[in-house]
Image (cartoon, rainbow, N blue to C red):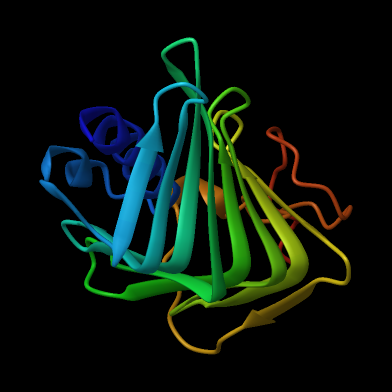
Length: 186
C-alpha cells in the first residue's frame, strides 16, 4: 500500500502542477476506494469503486484506477469513470474543473491525457475536445478530435507579461523600437 500511496502522490503532485497551485505538494493525500489490491509480481495496483483522491483543495474522483510499476518505478496511472472528474480551488478562490472518461498520467513522458469527452473549465472559460493532452515540462496543452474553446466575458486573470505592447507606428507589428506616430494636431 505504501507504493500505491507514493504513486498516487505523484499523480496528485502532477495535477497540482497542472492546476498551478504549488502549495498543494505539502498537503496530506487521502485515498479512498471500495476495494483495491497490489500485485507485487506484475507491479499493478488496482483501485475499484468510488475512487476518491484528495490533497488540499484538489479532489479527483473515478470509478476505478490502475497504476503500473516497472522495476520499482511508477510508469503510468490510468483512471476510468463515467466520467472521471477533478476539481480544485485555486489560490485566487476560483474553481477549476475537469472531466473525461479516462485520465492517463504517463510519468515517463510527464504527460497527462484526458480521453473521451475531455473538458477543462474555469472562470475564464472552457477548453474541450475528444482528447486533451497536457505536457508538464513544456506546459503545453493540445486538443484533438474536434476542439472547442469558450471564453467567458468579464475580467480575466492575465499574466503581466502576456499583453503585447501597443503597435505605436501602425505597421501591424509590435516592434521594440516602435515610436508613437506623429500627432496630426502638432
